[in-house]
Length: 415
Image (cartoon, rainbow, N blue to C red; front, top):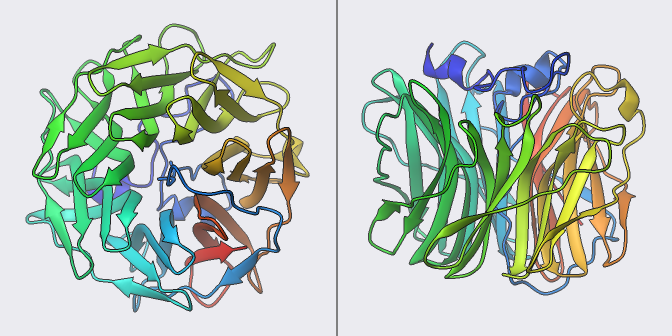
């Protein structure tokens, strides 16, 4: 399988629940997914933690984003903002569906988005960035995967305010393929990245730690033979929470979460809504080690999923479902979430009502989740919102859409 093809298919397949099309590992180029009007694009956000309360009730507006010249397939998968005037978004682009894919980074300066040249990976046939976290306007870390010598390997790049540079990431023993899907930094010298890798026998969740000089693999417990991490949020240098799913202990995938206390990772039990046979968590945002919100999907009758960590246990929060969700050809899922306090979170979701990819927004006010009106670009046909980041005065969501002059274009909106 080529690097281009690997970016467009699910590593886990559609066997998480018989008869259900659900592929949280189809990322960008997932681009192909949008153009074919089938869902399956999902990502984990790199939400900034420990930020002031944001207003999610303000009117959202689409912002103009550039696309690389001649690229017909473009998508932004994640965004991280340190202020209303400083955001970095990352993703992927390709000239066509059959051409190599490349990492993409864009910067918001308070008035417009501009493309930033990303670093070249020696010997890579393709590169893609799935998550980003900025500890400061001039200190960002992005992670993803690079297709090198016939296999997908971990990729990390760092922005120093001037250029992006590749950072060496250890390769887990026995890796056949692997990607990093989430990252969270509390400073330029403290980042945690998570993802998963496949071996000849299993799929394993993975965690890597940056200490300011190098990345080091962290030992994590695996409750099942097959485990995936999709998102991580660190509210302190020694306090991180990672989420995803495991698929072995039961016929359906199950939500999966672990917490790092500065010394070790420990598994935390994640409940499901009554009667739901399975589900998964795609994103998490923590404002303290005892206050985290995770979002994703469940296989019950009401598919959106949000859960709150209070320092001792995860508890389910009722969430509304978007209009027409019962006609969705794929999963209905909350892919990105960002919290600025225990009483203020905003989440982005995607689904495919009637078979056409679409997105929605939800906001948490400390007591309830509610749907928020999400704008669409002129001539919108299909689209997805894949990442979310909120500051004191503004939330930013990013993704991709089709229907305009470019086959699939980058998408950003803010309130």
